[in-house]
Amino acid sequence: MQELLAFAAALLALRLGGDLVQRWRSRRAPELAAWAVALLAYAAACGALAWGAAAGWDDRVFRVYYLCGGLLTAPLLGVGSLLLSGRRWAGAVGLVWVGLSVGVAISEPLTQPVTGDGIPAAQDHLDLFPARVLAIVGNSAGTIAVVAIALLTLRRRPVGNLLIVAGIVVGGVGSALVGLGEAGTAAFFAAAAVLLYAGFTYRSARSLLTLRPGIRLTR
Image 1 (tube, rainbow, N blue to C red):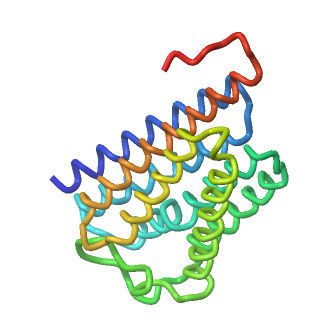
Image 2 (image 1 turned 120 degrees about the vertical axis):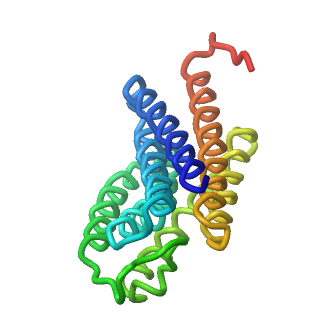
């Protein structure tokens, strides 16, 4: 049952990320590209949860989970928020961050092999520097960027921004409560993906209204 719930969460995040890719292809808005990659990374992290629940954890699965869930998702969400606010330099920073994260996740030696059931704790397998420090810095900066920009523009986008902040909170809770197991963590991840997607698409719809005043929201 654990693996089924985790796999369902992976499919949901993948579907939502794919929809954001389609929206980006039609609009070419850079924030949609960053958000799409963030949700696709989220889907990969959920896929690693499903694999670990079904076949047990090993070094490869742990590296995918740590890269996608610990190093990429929150920072790229922050990049998307910065791009939405007009800070185009965030795109270049995001590309550098992705390259650095992939390099660290692949090359960083594990202090001990990953085996068994249950989500592995990062402190049991990775040194503090650089992998864990990188995750702390990236997640902190990404979360601060998302929340700060959401609060600064709350009066203009109240519903969308509150959904995004709620998604960040729910995802953070799921990451912190590793004792819930793969299924519990995946359930939080799935809920977070839905909230984030709803916030992103609501913001996109409002942005379209500013470009086309004749369009009306039907919701």
